[in-house]
Image (cartoon, rainbow, N blue to C red; front, top):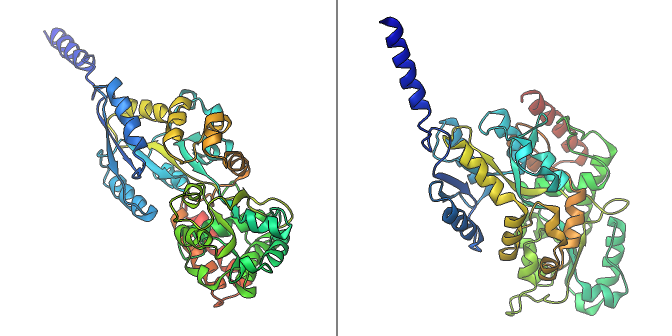
Length: 418
């Protein structure tokens, strides 16, 4: 009797396990928490997925516009172990933190055709040698320049900081450049300053942290990089109001003819080439890789990744959806509908896309040589510290030596406290 009862219970258990409902095997409708797409391309791609997967439909939830707000919302969901989100969009520098906190799940490397991605974004998607997210968008800073004025002054696009300064001297002597400044990047106290500082250090041959997360700011290269930014403010090469520049403020300054050279992302290309009268530099600018201390510079890698929430009950569908959004065919369609830089190298060789986005060869080279931001689990703390210290140097309230010494100590503490 007892044996029969046990067999009956076992049969019921096995029957329950074999019902294969979408929820039971990790499949079913999912929610995709991501940044808002103003072009409407992502909703179209999601609609195409939904048409083919009526039992595994995807609903888009827009995250806040600012990166800090996105991160805060995702962390709140993770800390409460909420299963509201299945697939989430994270900034590349957050990968280590989210993986270390076990807020996202490890992804099977052999399921994602990883050989087709740029090496740098893929490397940044790992934590302790394991893959935890997939590159969706990427990006690297490029140097925009006034091609009309450089041609008139008889100079070529610079490869080094010294060449840029020399080119500026000739261009600014032209009547057409009256009232302009040489260079601008992103120098307000926000994430963009971390990016510009990291680029300057890397472009001087240094690194903010090594691959293991160990700070490397007590080096001559770090000092050279910070001096490049500081000197520009001191000698007037950088306009004084650039201390308030984020991406859009800098873009408008270049677009209005106030600076000769400008470091920014690929998205501004179309805005500056607008033919509706909004751009004073339409057809009068070019783009090249950022300059460095002794040769072409090293951009800081940008971009967003897709990850599966550790608390999702639809893990299989979430992974399949990420594979769909990041395969080469979907990325090609995505690129046709928006200027977001894709993460697969094949997209940058497409003749149709090269004709549409003439900067793709430059962007390809910039991404290939780019470095990720500091590799630390406590990345948010590290970025805030960098912003605080570098902004103080640019504003003249502390010295480069003191700022770098403080940062070396702070980032060491953050690395040890991971």
